[in-house]
Length: 333
Image (cartoon, rainbow, N blue to C red; front, side, top):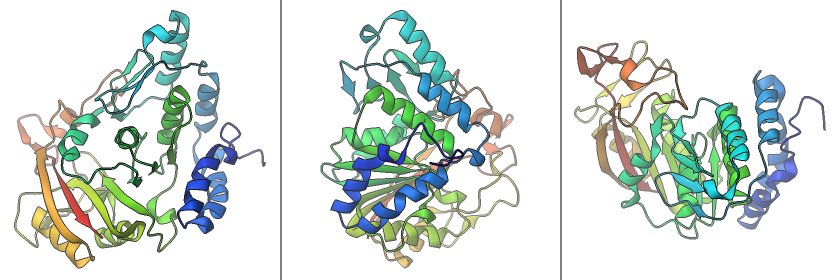
């Protein structure tokens, strides 16, 4: 292995994923994936990669007496499983991987209060989706994999999360270090890194990604390309209250975010989904984002939603645009 590639996570770490892909008709991708991962985990991609690797390597060995993945704060182990010094080492290591955007987690009594109450989003969609039991699931833009663990907790056969942010993959590996081997993986890849015509997954999630894509129709086609015929898409994104055919395209930033391209109305996005070949497209939830759901914490102490809104008119962003409202869409390929 070349010196500039990751050594903490050799490609052998993903052997179980390669087997799942090969068993379900994606053998060619399983053969290509080790090279993709070798390229993704290069130190040149991010200056902090070596530091994160050292943090992960220094995490204490732990063994969980209890695992509860289908609860709000994903629980792995409890405080009684480890001594006080091990708990301090674990917490210190996890804090070194700041900022934690998605959660919450409870890892051997260390409570990770992430920026997002990601469990609230899960509660909004859980009753509307097809049961995940025995399904192959893909989570696009999964962050540190919080929702991937929830999907596994619902009985999924295997869960693959992809997110190009290396820190997200490092945080996931820290959680998996606590859990031990499981049929869930997070790869530092983007959806365009997946093979064309994959048609592999029974369920595909894309949550908090759509408005970051320069070509929304292309993203819908990429998502459909990942689904087996008849599979289910769950898409969560920002929306505006407007008529069919209308959308918001920010001239600059939106809620201080640089890379927001298109925020459609619900009717507009339903039309796009149908035009992209999806069936049974429907909206199952529309909820305004509040600073109770997205906020600064000890685990994410940078600015958050409250800093991105107009202090005198919180129904507007700092740029004077409609404040964030998110909708959940479900459709079939």
